[in-house]
Every structure is written in structure tokens, then in C-alpha cells.
Image (cartoon, rainbow, N blue to C red; front, side, top):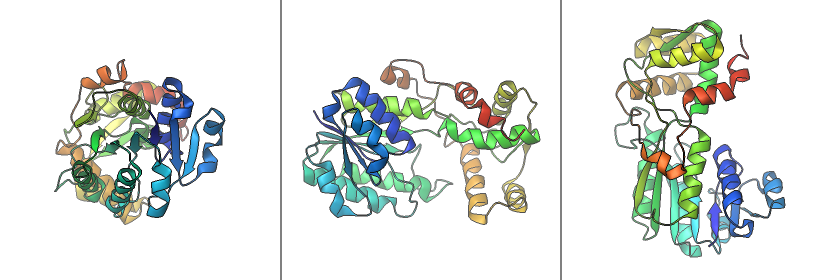
Length: 292
């Protein structure tokens, strides 16, 4: 069985590739990237490396050639992703791939506060289900690693400014997302399933501040703000308007419960308990304290 991973030079893609190279014959692993030269080290471990660009559909059929299962890692091109993902799914089908696994997003429903960042994933899920291929959807929760940078700012200033109210957030480590994807690609029984890939605990903003305080050794206090005041404050301190709006929209989504799901099935999928946010922050403690 030949397994293909797109976006293999990205953060998640490399972790998936590493996991697959440990569990499969490297000759059965094909890694696709816009930057194949960045995968030279994985090619030296026996993987096949190919060029493929979701913005160049002509490059994709050859990239998927000979594959039995393929992981389509969602791109970061908000506003263009649905078209990019359609091109990848169609190319996989044309190349004879029988099963596509897609990395999606929590609750990718119309009306989501973060807009296309979420809803384009829902569109892609629909495209995949209508493709005639076997499919598996991995709805990866918010990456715990993305809490390091805002956590560092909170630690440096001693305050965690938020509009998330009493909402809960369930961060998940990229390593656990990669482990789940590698399991689905390398084992049977996952066709037609949607998995919510989450961390083990739902955290309030007060609990997030407690974890930041514990790991950093510095007191972090929660400061609750309205959407309008947080937008104003972010822009006052240099954030561009689109960035400020995105941060506020994320906080609103947390407040309204879009990211609160904890799925215990993840531990069964990856064969161990998923990492906590505390685990991830400890692993990145140097970065967390970089601004102190």
C-alpha cells in the first residue's frame, strides 16, 4: 500500500511523514510539496519526494500517481482553499487514489464567527464526501503550539487580555494530530468516519492563565474585554485591522462554544493519552519566556 502526504514540508506534514517512516516501509511513502528540496532529509530515509502545487492542478495528478491513500493537508490560503482542495481531490481521483484523508477544523459550519477560516473546511468536507472516494475527515482542534506566542505576551505583561468570556478551549498538539493522521493512513477501518482530534482537557481563560503562570513562574491575570475594546486595544498596540479582527473573532468563537469539545476517542486512535497544553508549553518554555 502506497501512502501520499501533501504539504509534507509544513509543520504538520513533516510530523506525519516522520511517523509514517517509522511504521511503514519508506518505499511506500510519497511526500508531496511545493518545495521538494526541503524534504531532502526524508528522501535520504527512503521516501519518494514529488513536486505538487494546489495552485497548479496540472502538477497534481502525477504527484498522486500510484497512491492508494492520500492525506490532503488543508492549505493556509484563506479565500482560495476550497478551490485548491477541490483540485487536489479531483487529481487524487484521476490518479486512482482510493481513499483521501482530509485535515479539517472544529465545527466548520455556516455562521461560524471566524468566517471562511472555518466554512471553507465545511465546503471541502462536502466536496470530499461527494467525490465517490473513500474518505476520512480529521477535525483538528486548535494547535496548542499556537498558544505559545500569545502566552509569551501574557507572561511578559502579566495580563491575559481576552474576549472569550466563560468559553472553553481544547488545544491539541501537532504531534498528536500527526499521530492520528498516520494511524488513519496506515491502518484499516477508518473510511467514512469523521474524527474530532482534540486535546484531553477543556480550559477556561482562568485555567489558561493558571497554566501560563505555573509553567513560566510568573503571575498571569485574566483581563476580560468586550469585542470592541479588544479590537481597539490590539490596533492601538500595532496590530493590523485584519489581524485584530481575526483575534477577536477567535475569542468570540471560544465564547460561543465552537471549540469546547473534548473527544476521548483520540487516545484510542493514537495509542496513548494526548498531550496537555501544559506539556506543550513546557516543551516550548524558552520561547514562552523569550520576552521576559
